[in-house]
Image: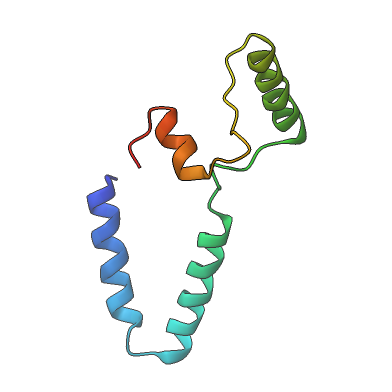
Length: 85
């Protein structure tokens, strides 16, 4: 079944339930739980986190890092490093 077909089926089924408040409450609760389950792409394991820190430390050791100057705000720092802010 394609995404378009699934979408149509879901809306057909929803139209059947739309006149029942208790059923709509159940659907809303279920949808809320599904949304909560959706994976956050920013989440990482402890091992992934420490591996990322290690890679960053290696980049700094190779001189590939960027440093903010003591009198510099974030906007100035980003502009100095080539970002169009």
